[in-house]
Amino acid sequence: MIGTRPSLVHWSAPASKPTDIEALFTEHSDWHTYYGSGKAALRDALRLALESSANTAGGNVLLPSYLPDAVLEPVRDCGLEVRQYAITEALEPDLTDLETRVDSQTVALVSVNYFGFPQGAFEDLECLAERYNCVHIEDNAHGGLSFVDGQLLGTRGAIGFSSLWKLLPIPDGAVLFLNEPRLVDAYRPSSLAGTNGHLQTADVQFVCRSLLADVLESNQTLKHSIHSLVTENGLTAATSPPEQRYEAAKTRMSWLSAYVVGEADPVTITDKRRENYRAWVSVFENCPTTTPLFDSLPRGVCPQVCPVRTTDPDRLQRALERYGVGGSHTWPRLPDTVDGNTAYETANRLSRDVIALPVHQHIAAETIVDIGLDLAPTLERLG
Ligand SMILES: Cc1ncc(COP(=O)(O)O)c(C=O)c1O
Image (cartoon, rainbow, N blue to C red; front, side, top):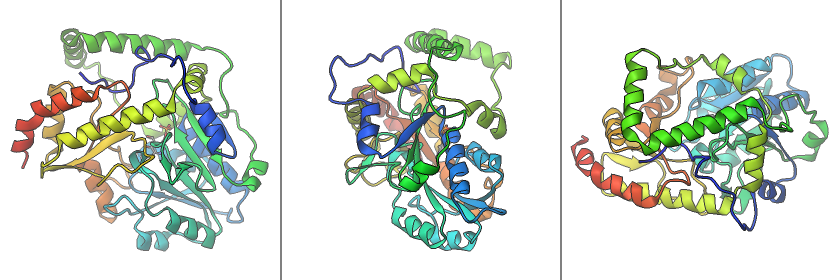
């Protein structure tokens, strides 16, 4: 069985470790601070970009079309216009499309390091931001522990941020990086910046949920009975609208998250995630209908998931669930302005055909290989 996320129950502070995540950020960035979520960090990043920009009246922000709907909310919260640019099959900005949307009122250009891999067109965006005198924000929500050429992702643009809860067994957490002295000087923390000084009810609730998830994971019969009971009685929670999810994410980082960040060993986590990523790649070797989205796993990358592109996502997902893989999913829930919009064909296609497979540090690579053997007949039938 493969759990959706790393489990707090299976987590233990390593007895000895060469470094921890807080120390890693201190070593590899000029300045950083914590937030409850990537969206909260993005909100303060945009406020800072706006304050330090000449392009204020009717300002706009450019973001990729291949992005979850709620990530647009901080832009609106800052009173800025959302403009989304098309992307290519290589998950890079379509620069022709981007150039038609950027103008003298652009306050910030956002680029994304998808799934923990460095954005290939990073330098092009740097040049464009310089030409239009706006701030380049490196959205590194997926790649909190990834490096490229010895540089920590999130520390390359003027501003960057990483979501930590996507990699660790924690209730919330993100880090904001300011990579230019003028921005550090201009930064004024909002009430969302920093960490809570003590344990709160939400931390305790998270621990209880982790314990329950662990009990259910170890007893699949009980898990399926509860699942049937919940769905048959119409008790499944509908996903709340993006504005509501954003409002809920406007918090400081919890005490529990800060504690784990101060104890977790980034080297072990990265090694394990890379090993599991490679195990999934081996499962789909010689499978023409399902292929990894990235050609290789470059040195320094700590993958968030293993994204694969498949001809029949529904069937593959059903098979994965049947063989006990929790948390495989298509990504993302696109904003209404992008969903079904022919101007953003690639984003729509990727959001349908790409399945993100879990690689977290509490999965044993052998389990992935065994599941691959079970999956083989399904993969042969995918057409
Ligand atoms: C690319 C990207 N950027 C930003 C975010 C926002 O991060 P958070 O969920 O920590 O608010 C997400 C969340 O899924 C994301 O996928």
